Length: 151
Figure (cartoon, one colour):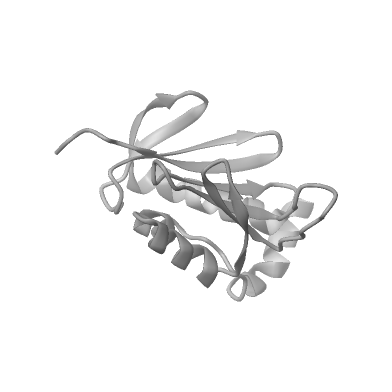
């Protein structure tokens, strides 16, 4: 009940917040489109680690520890795949994850289980492959699974 009340009270504010949308995810097919999506949604560059470009929303960079953020966007420069992590202890971030997952389930077709991810084929996606989601350790994760088969 408290969560519902919180959502109802702050729904008008959500229209002014920066949110990644289902359509944003479906548009990502290159480093350029990934950067456009994260930069336009106020994510800040955190670095390049292990072949992943990392951007954080509400990023706090710490010199003695890892950086923290309420949301992360990462792009694998080798496979051109992306991952978005939504830290669920932030109610509006959790709602954002839930909205994207709801659209994936309604607009895409179930494909298969890939590890711990539920994956879907999305006809409107700009990338070849599937999109999947899972919840793990207090975070919601949405990941692209590229299809490298030749056309």
